[in-house]
Length: 303
Ligand code: SF4
Image (cartoon, rainbow, N blue to C red; front, side, top):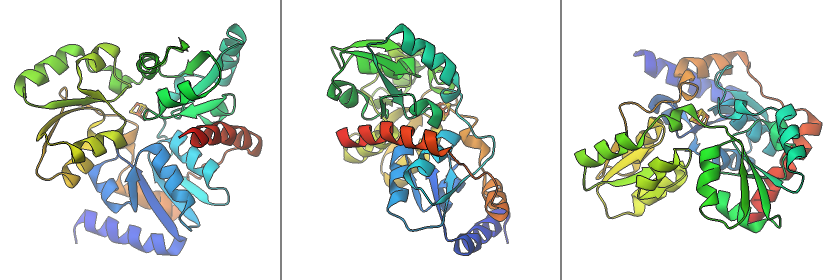
């Protein structure tokens, strides 16, 4: 039996034993996406889990996502698929720094991208995703917004609102790496392609794109579009569901590689090890959980 087939059978057995569901982010390795019960973006996955009756959620992604699943699914054990899978963007802000910024801008409402630790969400007024940022900012009463932690997403939202946006200077290494030059050279190679980039990309990259979209929006856009060729400006794991769902269309990544090292820490082997040992359980202290949930619930009430 092949190595992979064996890992897949082991995982199927462990799923029954643990009464577990496995969810995987769109940026996970294709093999990992294929063993998951659901694949999607971070919020979709955390919400999806609410409607599933399982004792254990195995979250194939990074830590802030597993925390969000734990917050929205109290009483369920959430196991992260690799102990060190974090998000360098989320790590760019800590509670002490956020408190300093809040003191500096006392009138501003803190809008936190979901790519933040639970302790940061707990200090924020409302959360947003890369899909609903402008909607959230425009829906809350405050005229001044302190947007954390991604300056590129914050800048993109600022083009869709008249509110005063204060941008915390965090960024995602993976998305900020692609340059306008790479987009231009990709366009030359595929002049007929639609260019879809993630709002975590730099403003000058977004300016060259046909659309700035979250991963779930890219999947919807590609499915509904009459175009046949697409240039994709986000983590290359998304190519897997794009190609699977649109076998008649062509997808190319912008740049030579577009990889989030933390997303790629999870393999079938780490999933097996996590399930066998029950290790990497992600817990959020009750007091933080309640306040973080408030910020998430405010977002869900708007969208
Ligand atoms: Fe974080 Fe960027 Fe990786 Fe997403 S792609 S998990 S924002 S580092």
